[in-house]
Picture (cartoon, helix red, strand yellow):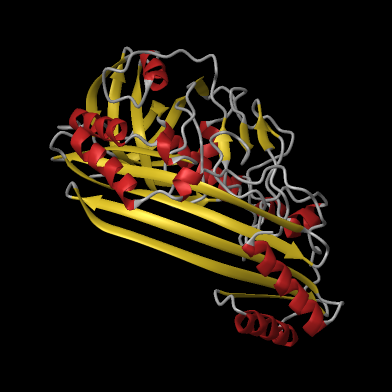
Amino acid sequence: MSAELDLAGRVVDLVRRLAGSAAEAEALVDHTALALTRFANSGIHQNVADATTAIRLRIHLDGRTVGGSTTVVDEAGLTALVERTIAAVALTPVDPAWPGLAPAAPLVTDGAWDEATAQASPDERAARVRAFVDAAEGLETAGYCRTVYWSGAFANSAGQSVSGRAAEAAMDGIARVPGADGVARLGSRRLADLDGAVLGGRAALKARAGADPIELPPGRYEVVLEPTAVADLLTNFALYGFNGKLLNERQSFAEIGAPQFDPAVTIVDDVTATAGVGMPFDGEGTPKRPVTFVGQGITLGVAYDRRSAAEAGVASTGHGWPGGSSFGPVPANLRLLPDDAAPTAAVAGPAADGHTAALVSTMERGLLVSDFWYTRVLDPKTLVVTGLTRNGVWLVENGEITRPVRNFRFTQSYPLALGPGAVLGVGGNAITPADSWDMFGFTGPSLRLASWNFTGGASG
């Protein structure tokens, strides 16, 4: 038995002893160890590490639901957590939508564990930073390399008792020339997959290719989005599109069974996939399993936690998270499947890889986009998002990258951008860019899309 599972079981036993058998209780224990090496001006300026064990308790008693948490894990701390959570019951409104506790069920996977990543030293992260900086050949660089591992457990008074562990590594960096940045970022369950020299070389090539950009008028352009930009689409689909609570409230675009996407689009959430980085069960103890949200263009489902699932009359898909009942369930391992038969081409310019270069070669006139940032949802129902391009945009003419272009502001419905007939090509190389949230991984290939609505220049 893991230390975390022992803690979770002790908390549930304490609730039974102090509140009686009528209390429904669940305890989630997370031990997270994060190590981060940051660099700027081509030198490491920060190296930090932090390890925390947190316990989250939820009790349903007398028709009311109360949550509490602590990082004090000795006997006195556990007792104080249980006592103050029980005391809060009397002060809490009645919860008529309580869905009950997760039933006992086995895990599909026990996590994505890599011992070498979990035990990585500061020297190993620094070596990757050194390689990134060296590969930039004198350009100013900045970014980070991180490793993190999680060991957790869940227990409830309905008999569910599970534990697991996972590790993750990520590197995100830019190289800079006057007026232009180039980016390279990658996340993986294994630190060994991160090659600082490859990432630094790619970032430097993009930066140099972005110098002296021209300004183009706003309008609708055909685009090739690189995986770093596609990750932003998947993030917003995860937060707002495939959210069962928002679907219940009619704030999601999703229509189950409708052909809302191009037939080339299949989107799954799969913590068991090779690229999957994450926890094997959700914050309510429901085991995670592969879930298909879009299959060959047809919307097949959304993510549910126990509360949103009960309201919809379906089963939880294992996407609940602690304290997430107000926002709703979030899939953390969304993956847009690549086209395994997609062609590849030699990379002679700023395109991220051979599959991206092949998509560019088929475009008569359009834009190659590296990255999106500062994206904000204007309308959750249609998932209209506004944001900026970043780290490289290039004009493509007759299949050739001809000029760097200044950044744009865009305003675009993400579902419509991937709608029927709108996807002109899917790359064969799905990548998981480093995400700002550890233990999240949004994986996708490059995409060639018929239209993207650029609404203004970022300089204006």
